[in-house]
Each structure stands twice: as structure tokens, then as C-alpha cells.
Length: 79
Image (cartoon, rainbow, N blue to C red; front, side, top):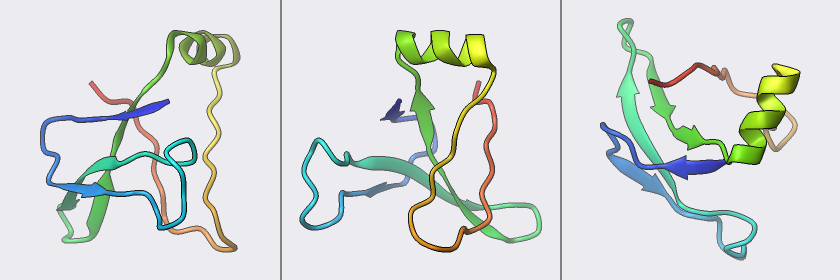
């Protein structure tokens, strides 16, 4: 999957120091907040054709959160 530019992008997270371009790429995000004032970051990802075929067949995606705790996260379709 490739992080993509989208309407509303207002910040870019760059790769951590010491990581190579193969490990990580810049992540365009929209910093905003929900109707209750809770802040969030949104990024949009585009699947390769191969990834799309796998998701269509399996109807599953995996979310990896590095570390030992997970922050609140959400996955949603993007139109």
C-alpha cells in the first residue's frame, strides 16, 4: 500500500532518523478533530493491483501498530 496525497492534507510525517527509504516513506496526513473535539490524524492509502486482488479474495486487512500498546485506531473506506 502507498500513502497518497488527498484533499485536506495539512502535515507530512517524515521517516524516523536512521530508517531507509525502503523501510518508510513520508506520510501525508490531515490533522483535525471530530465533532466532540477529539483530535485525530487521517492518512489515505492506495492499494496496488496485487493487494487489491488479495483483499477482494480474503475480505481482510491487517493493522500493525509497532510498540507494546495500541492507541485508538480506526479503519474506514475512503471515497
